[in-house]
Length: 164
Image (cartoon, rainbow, N blue to C red; front, top):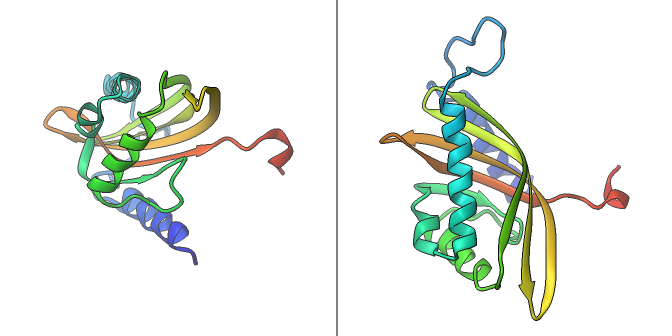
């Protein structure tokens, strides 16, 4: 089993085995509905604005100190805060970086939340416009009234001829 698969498996196991999440499900077996879903979408908007603003400190304030990131451009999971910070330092050097959020699916589970969806990342690199359609999953923990990213997975959407 590859390191990436093992890390993903461990993250998924920890998320869904968490006693915070393993509470009695609502009677209709759907994720709990609350005003927190808007806050989770707001946390994603803060991430988008911080990335577009090119401020690494603002970006890093959105991540838990033990966050893990499986990114669009890094081959291995980023398991240390310094790795995530270095990743964003490399990403934001590209001029005109934009994140266009296409759809989101926020769900709250007590003090944990998940938001999955799609966005398009665009920027200029060596004078050329680069556009990358991507899909994402952010896992959040509610800390001091603020949703912090504890796990992020972003990947390029496969091109139509790559899908099977």
